[in-house]
Image (tube, rainbow, N blue to C red; front, side):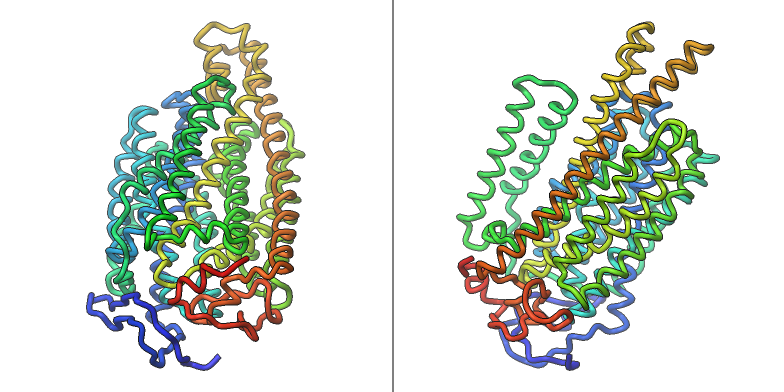
Length: 578
């Protein structure tokens, strides 16, 4: 690729770190360098900080769950909300934050979000009840929603060269793995001598570093023609998500009644109204026609499903290795390192593999490999399961890493630069919502199987102890300690057996979903190619976000030999027939 190219520029504004506009992008034709500078690569390292924090935060919380449960004594439902309220409120706010970033500036939103995240982490650290921690985690989710779409949108605008952007997205993906590598070790060391609440304070130093370096190394990026933030659509999307989640979690927990079903119907109805509202708007933040395109929906759905299985597995595995196998937080954290290193390896394998085979093939293969890894987790037992957990985490990490990075690039490349914030937010919403549903559904199903299995022995206990045993494994072990003697040992053993059984069932469900996704993704992509559906990769030029899924030789610039459309011409891009 030449060092510069003739590019029809869109109406995105880029400014230097001092706030002065270095380039006011208008619809004019002029030569523009598409290669990133050293400053942009240094800025990428800054953008990796919030990704590192988010990844560390999840790992730290999972390690702290046993101590947290023992001290706050939450119910099974409250424990699930402590973990997933962050993700649900974050997912419900992502699209709104993406629109705000497009309008007020993505760097500005990122810095405001970093400051808010740090302040809210302090609130979570000083929570004194399960309800208070749930509220603090919800606020953290809203603050976290400002981070991910801003980082993706800035990468989209900072790295115009297709090869460099793929490398940048690889670094972005690897930063999550690095957080997974550092988080368990840091969490284990912290929890070894300090209370569980201190795990929330670990996020503060990286956020302060982001606040110091962001204004210097990151350019401001906004859409000068962005429409106003649609408050009604934002509120509708959030209520829709929470209503569906409430109904699904209630049904999974065994609360079969009219209220959960009504909540699901209301949530789906509001979602349909939201899509209808977007279709009627003259310039929506996200063109709703994208949601009808296979090349946008298929990778988005696969990305969400992968996070669904992963998040649900992490929630259950953290409790299994500590409460069933009896590992300390530090030991559990150290045993998670092989899986994290495997994820880094997978992040490097993905881009290399696309030089020889189509990205859709790499994604499908990654899903099959990850299914095999999760399948190893179905072999655990009460007495011996550490080997299966470690081996399984290594295998599924190698498979999932290229799935995440490649499907993310497919989604981000599906829209022009001026919609980068909204599309990035949509991708992150799908990922976060998928992960949250994984915790909610797999966690709720596991809890339901657990309660069924311990029902007999719980019925022989006093009322208070019986409730603790039925709610969580941590509560059951605490009740067993209070009972003491042979009776207490029998309760603890029964609870561990029940949890292990429910864990195996949940992982079996995850394996089945991944196998179905691999087959469906391959069939959909092939069908779209046979019917002439054109991916944005083959219709946009290289600096407008190309990505070869269907056309050209592996490694060839996307769109080689294809009709090149003006990326600023939304009607020609979105209005084509399938």
